[in-house]
Image (cartoon, rainbow, N blue to C red):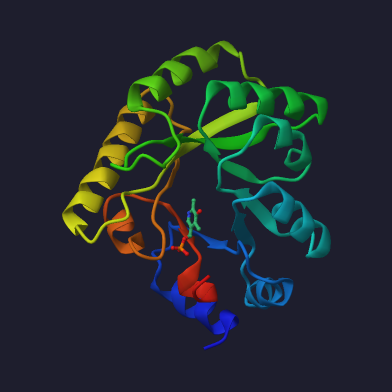
Length: 216
Ligand SMILES: *Cc1c(COP(=O)(O)O)cnc(C)c1O
């Protein structure tokens, strides 16, 4: 199977309301172009340097998603072109994105990354921390970011019921937030190993790498 065929086959399995972000980290330009030529426009990268190189070299209508931990000193490099930052995991980072977006005269869509896994290595806010940020934001404090949803990663485990439970907790939190913020619509959850469960539990954006491009 080629990457283009993988993309088409994968999209055919996805419900219409679910956005596919093709995670192209570590993958070379020709493979990304093959996916693009199969109609894929949303791509995700987790490192700023790699993202910048690829953005410069590939078609300009690609919508780039930053899905990995972002250091504040690198925000300025991606702000001119990034489509959605999934991995906002501190208020300091949110403030820096707001500042740089102001300079670039942009409003950057972002997601708050929520810590739902039982793992030490995953970044993100607790539900309480996220709620506190969302309460403060309508005052216009961050006028150059648009917080439009949440991102979460489940524990990397064979225990499907645990994964399901973690996704479900995020879905119920977003439903709670949506009561007050109706434009809060993006729920980014699900990767190659767990995207089906994620969609069953309410995801509307999946981030898929290895199922499309092969193992890294
Ligand atoms: C690498 C990565 C993915 C894709 O993982 P696959 O298992 O290859 O589908 C999704 N989300 C994040 C945050 C990643 O870093």
